[in-house]
Length: 417
Image (spheres, rainbow, N blue to C red):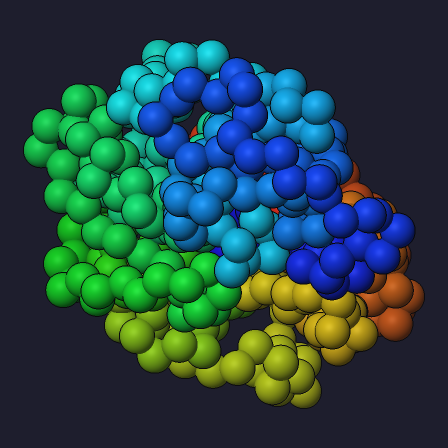
């Protein structure tokens, strides 16, 4: 999954602003009364992230990962944030304004609100015991993702500040899930950039049920936190298109789309292609758990699709759900070509009237760009394509207006005419 918080500035955000003068040291803000360190800003921003060049004077007591009170250059209260001078994002705002900020009350309230949204408003417990419980800035907790898998609760950290709050977060979650067992995740890249080291968790698999489909999940291993909860609604949406069809699920991971197509959709034949052998092993366990006959193939998507074309294979429904092909600006050119090639190959294998469900989880890729990739692929494949739907992650993956990168998942529903 996309790092939901981190978006680098086009220039080095840690570099000094040559147009700004050195801040005049004033010492402790006169209105500062909280028992936490303070930071005075040199400049402000409309978003929730403040970069190093925006910082002015910093309390000598402030340490990386601390919760700090933030003031503007006139000493007016600005907010409360997680502070990390080692990171490209020096401050991640928790609140606008300071008031009588109390960490326990803050985390209890934010997590209670997030849980209430999933349970009372979205009514997710009626459909699944696997869902995104906290989605970073979308739930007002920047640098933190929490996924629920039954009694297994996976905490994924994208910031040092949230990592240092792990015990407090777990206490808040326990108020709603008393039997919770916690697993901690953070990518090696995040640990290196943010400056912390995560002790590895021992793997303990669990089973979850989503719309009647059973999945084996190990929160301590695999991509993201072990399962793609963001695709739940899209998995359900392919069901009407699968009946009696030959279905190809490419980059299947542990078989989400494949299992829905077979067990709920009544597909005639389902093939799931996945490169990761560990994921293929779990995919086979999932097929057995659902008594679903799935042809599982451990292979790279590109040569597999080319060979299928040479063998004149045709499918009524194809799902393309690759890993993040464009992670940053440096990977854009190659990633663009991969997206086009993957969709060209997929479109070439569809029967007339066949459906292509093509996905991108690259947050820096816009909808317009993704649409253009598919248009280019359709032209290259010589297929006339009707796009009849756009979708994204489920409602348990909210994003804020000032953080559009949170809308990372993009799904296009296409029909070959």
